[in-house]
Length: 331
Image 1: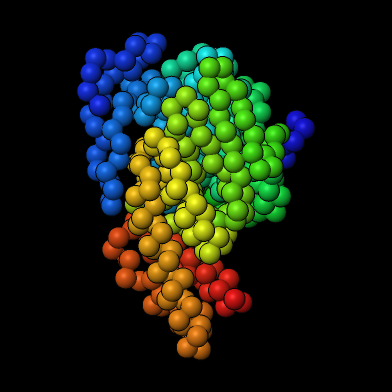
Image 2: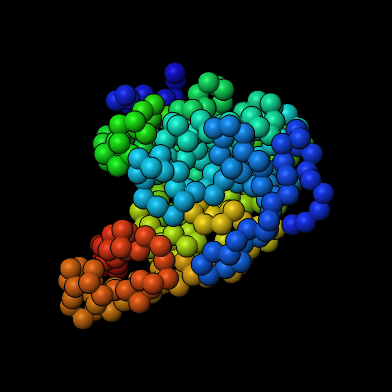
């Protein structure tokens, strides 16, 4: 299929009425640091992921705070979909074809409108490896213009690592599905009665981050520019990420959806823990560089005061410090 690279080894109130399949959910449980915004949960159909309607027509599935494994089948990130009068847009597709299909089933439990767009917020496997499940809908796959290059360059490594971590059964059906629509700066997508504004971002979490804002509800999907609970992971620029956070904290939106964390949060406070974590690493690393310390020294001490504040800290923190040191030593 043109544009695709196949690399296969293989709040209270009465019940909602959307297709008779939604019911009132209890308010979302608190997560570390910040109070999530309450919402409504869709009763999952058979073999469908549980999703919460955080605003009219805006649904979010909350992933687990885990590394990918045969047990979670790659369900470790947030994903969602937005329903317009004419069509649906899916935002991220999780980490395997299997959970991508379960996300698709969740869409079909809500609406039979065509899935016109699948939007990826960035290139990481836990957000794009479910794309294959949506090929049957023949949507446009939409992403930052830099995503294709980054994903092509990492395809072999991503597939090898994820096959090992997921195991052969959960890995089955995964392939690299590249964008058919590339976003350069901004793009507006029409779903009928609501539009989505897509905006590329300067290098931050990655060099191919994309944010999506729904015009009808003023809801913004931030992808992995925002982590809550799950320790942030740096695959771009620590200085760039801090600058993007500073910019986005000024936005006036009703709610934001993080790439990892609760279904929805509020600005500007949603960014506070992440900003503090990244700024601490940058400060510590700069001091160590000034004092003539090595990257190995930095990985033993820089930012470790935050160890008890984040899930998966031991899995990602040293990698973050290493990337920050490699960037900041050339200032």
